[in-house]
Image 1 (tube, rainbow, N blue to C red):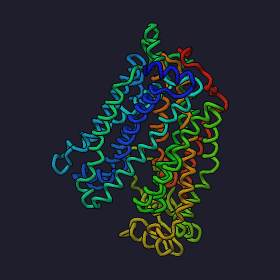
Image 2 (image 1 turned 90 degrees about the vertical axis):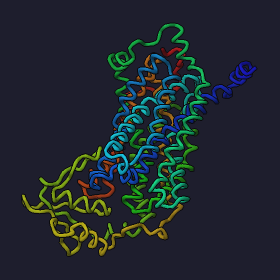
Image 3 (image 1 turned 180 degrees about the horizontal axis):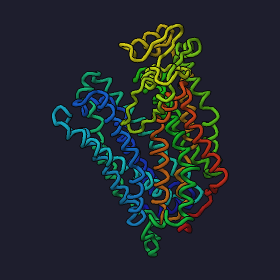
Image 4 (image 1 turned 135 degrees about the vertical axis):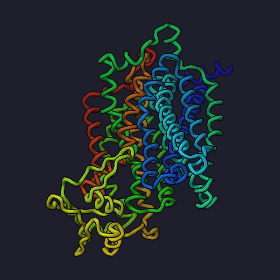
Length: 544
């Protein structure tokens, strides 16, 4: 009866019960995987104290960043391993494995003993669990996107897969709200002591529900038909990347789609949160509420643009997202400063600061994994100013001269006792606020600007699953789309905060780091416009 009913529903053009279950199960599992991934990043400061308390604070922070970055760095390797498995064994069983690994890794972090009770083995296990999480996430997205797309009828793949595209944002949204709720209920001391474990432990419930639902699903029809005919690839890696006609698609997908999508995605959500807290000095709770509100308002646009991509194509929607981000990012982030911290905006305008240093001592402070040390007098001076969101100009000094900071008529030389403290006092005297005044925040305009950033995310992210699936034939689809997706998102996107910080430190302008997402988005706009095909009308049943 259910099959006959589904057949009648399909004939009418409506989504069948089986298709709804496929979308729900795939999306639910992916939401939970992103939730698992994000709670680590959100709780990084607390985890540093719990697992790296046996070393000095600087080294502890370095190790925490290393553990976080490891999850991004290994994602392409997970894409290769699990993508190959998915093209040989099947979509369903592969993303069951990735989801289980991710969930177990998160749960084990929640029960892992601290450095104080277990010693050095605790941070070692933590980093290993992060590596497992990154590998698993590298295989999850490709499986979910491929599985849903291969169940979707022609002409509706953008709409069907757009539900998966909501999952990263919903995972972030859920992580922020759960942490905020527990933190508020317990109070900061109890949460920092042991309450931080609760969000990790909750993943066991989420994992059990996801596995139960996914076990009820069948293999995707396109893969099953290909398998029945004995046409599946025996060597997906060499076929996907060893043959130029397929490797070329992967390269174009990386530079023309996923790299630009990644910087708009991370710029509009992660960097926006970073900018609020680190640059505009908004307290963590207020910043989370602002971002969560914008995510709630913007998330429905994933579905809208996924549906629209079935009508007008994947390319025009993604090109619009790349172009809007590239053209308006400076205006939007300057607007955030204006509406969130007007005192900082005034200080930036009225109190110019100069760093006077030997140029040979000034490093480009790119530190994606947190292991590099910048100890020259120039780097120390610039880091002190960047930490307080101070714009500055650079002035060359004779070789060997210790760097100094000129603020108004006051000059402070590095090496002076309490140099950082003196710089802080001087910039405070010149009007730079230590924190944003919550009473001065224009909340409606701030939420509007943050929501615009989220809408840009939906423009580039909603159609990309369908586009990537349609670019690669069924034989190598899981492998082919996973690698460019996770290089784009794991490397171009994941290292965006470190890159932006380095650019800001080098130039002395708090907005100059935006050139990184602007340049990458512009590159993707040009590559996609000139070299990537429109694929919305491609029939996957004939695309083996």
